[in-house]
Length: 194
Length: 430
Image 1 (cartoon, one colour):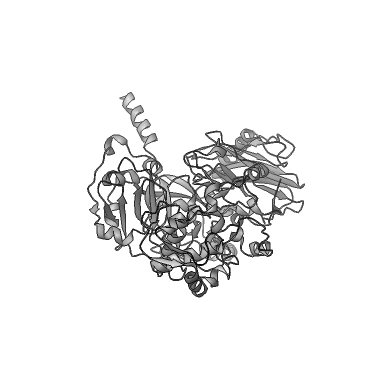
Image 2: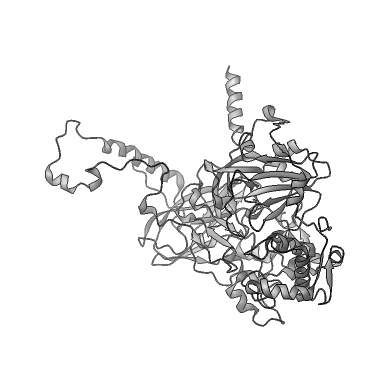
């Protein structure tokens, strides 16, 4: 009896944050409904760096500029560096030779310390984020051609491609982002944490 | 049995054991004094009646269906941060941790960061979809999820950018502790362990990552290693005993204990099982760390060991110039339990082990305190936390030596407060 009490005490102590394994091992509740391929298609918007899910369509930096001026400039600034919303072009850090006012901009909008052009390692991510979230007041309203064009314009603002370049599901994969060579990984290893 | 607390260093920190003894004798005496003098007491003389407060001479109000704080506490509010990019939808509020005792943050004061505003979701139309590298793609509606086995651990949640002003500002900004470090809360979230849902779908052997996505306007998404989801992650449906608030992801959010707030995807509606991360917006830029050598560190999920003194803290005015104060604060680690917190009242020259109030839970806020007799002189007070893996809070200069001067995420360095001779408390760099 005494041993049983000890066992129960230990059980109670360990059951606080975890469900008892013996009862719930290999649990199959069968409460899930099947998800049809049509439903998956409706929501399957994530673009991966290997090109998975990139759609058909195309757009040039020139086309992107027109769209940008109409729908993006009011938040991201004339050249993608002024803010108030995230900096799209240029380097990361406090200062840059090409932008003497940078420090003043940062004082006003601290997030302008970093930029898409300098930190993002994959062009596919730019397409992905424009399509799912931009413009801020009407997310998911831009079609695939517009998203390719705007991605191209942001790359052009960063001197990564030229103005005549056309992006599509093939050419976007050839874009080499400068940040990729600066990558270091915290998962699964984090040298700083050792 | 008078037991005077012993001053054990010249800063005025008191030895805990002798202090507690004297506290015991005091509390033992109180109940006797509070006993009614005479159960046959007459009605009070009229002069005494008049002096009674109004609320002792009339019946109170009936109870309400949903309780609210006293109107006298209405000033305890979250600090609304100046929206970082000043477009209306990037919305940030900080928990007033200087007003919070213990380790639980009330639901209405839970910090919140929303990159695309707070959506109004109809729970009857909301589904959790699981697809990708699985044997069968499945979905759960809310009613089915609520029937599954749940866990209810107590954890902290902290934004990766918490305390960013101290990481990047050259001078110590005169801000309060909630302005500086209020992007942290302590909550008992309840929900369904991910492993049951993934078991139901049957994860393929080559799966390594899961892209978690919200149903908000911006479809916030993060790539999470599958191993974390199979370990201690869960779909949170409740916070502190009631259903999630919209600002915390109603009707459901991902909860990944100990990891940066941004990975705890709110309004969760889709889990895509994959063999690679997606490099979503936040894991590409804003939530990367820029290191001192210019490298960009990706996927730094853990929130490291950290502590902050909340009483007294920035912008407070100590009411008396000298005398007794209970120094108290919060410590936490995304790697496990807090093992020890030390406090210094002499700018880090000497340190004294603080008292840890229970419960001490893994990846949860832990309350520490230490009695202190202030001598009325200028002081700089600090706290330093250690976790069960012997990780220790770095100094500000140690922390900054690892990172670029403008890298602001995952700042966990020691917080110092200066107290001047007038009792004014200010943010301070040691």
